[in-house]
Length: 126
Image (tube, rainbow, N blue to C red):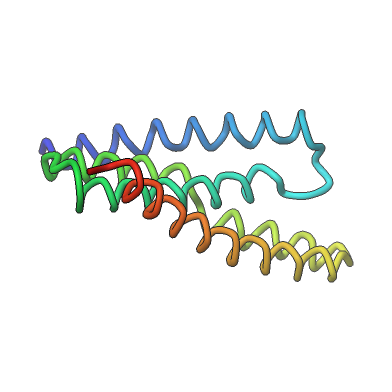
């Protein structure tokens, strides 16, 4: 039961953070492009890289804490389904070039962010 509660609490918090990022990005950058989802996916990729590095090199949290952070929080924070919907909306709205650019930037920068998270942990941990 502790495992389920850890995942549920993490997921709830991640979802709230995702929503806050979506709203904040919309206010700062406008709603013509899915900035919130892009930011969340890149930040989530960085965080999963950093946490994976921390777990491997510096911190051995409980299994519940790992599930809270990775499966719960980051699972609720990032969302590939929203990314897919954003792509479909751009594509169906006739913004073909923006849709393709969105996929390329989302995937490539998110992968780079994951490696940046791993690198950051390796750099700052003994």
